[in-house]
Image (cartoon, rainbow, N blue to C red; front, side, top):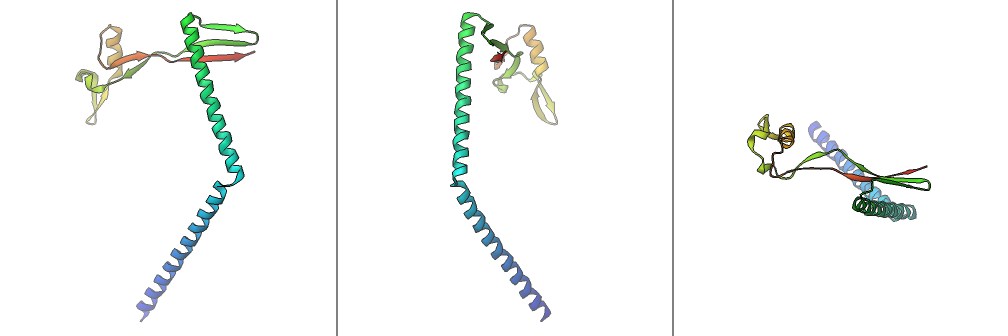
Length: 146
């Protein structure tokens, strides 16, 4: 008899908790929906979109200026209170296709093959051509205001 009462109590408590959780979840969903439709969230999303568009426009203009300066063989110029210059990163190694690399360049670490970039760099210093490997640099536009 005690087991039946304990079991009934346990089932009733769990059912009560599950019922509360469903109610809470429904209330949270309702509040989240109200919040998402609120004017402040709409304004925030509008400003986020405008910010993203401004960043994209900035990148587009900087890329155009990089092309213009590179085509003109100009590294930097100053006008009034603005200084614009090209900034070139150091060379970095880019592996385009690991399958084309020979095994002597690959290291086995815990039964996993990894690329030995030091060996590749040494080969490149010796002017060896390795298919699927290139070196590249990034060029960015740096603008200083006086």
